[in-house]
Image (cartoon, rainbow, N blue to C red; front, side, top):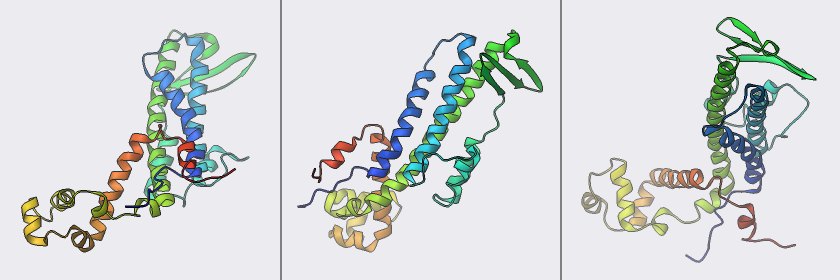
Length: 250
């Protein structure tokens, strides 16, 4: 092998991840046993709302849509439709517009005037009802869970973009060129073509290149699975400068 593929993500991938990094920082900040006063709860909820918005901006950016525009939040999400699979869009839409058990509305003009709704009852923030801390705590927790789901969906969308942009690099070498012979046979065992490596050799011979040529879709799927695992493992670690390092001038 004389060519070293650049398997790091593309520029648009990195441009979109910037938004997801902001969302992940907020998720991490409030996930592990944080303590807060009720008065701080509204600010935390605002941060989580911002994080969920950053996820949408990140997905829009990686799909080459403007991160933001003068429109409703629902339209920002709906414009993603057609850029990803119907199934993935439905999952994204339903997750983003999940109906939370605790809902709230209001504004902060000098003083925070918000109202919380839970199980048919409403609680005004200004009145400081005794249930307030529990309500805010529940509202925060269910939105953090939602944010985590949104980030996982976003990572799946980013993987599709990663494959789309880097397919020439990913498939530059065949599976048989990169992996040992026994690993070729193991793919056949894993997919139920044979029951053992010995059977694979007996049935298909020892030319692993020829074996791969007989099952191209099977080995393409295996390559994609390998890179999907790598994509998840390295998602937050990859540095754009390392990708640029392969070839650039200034």
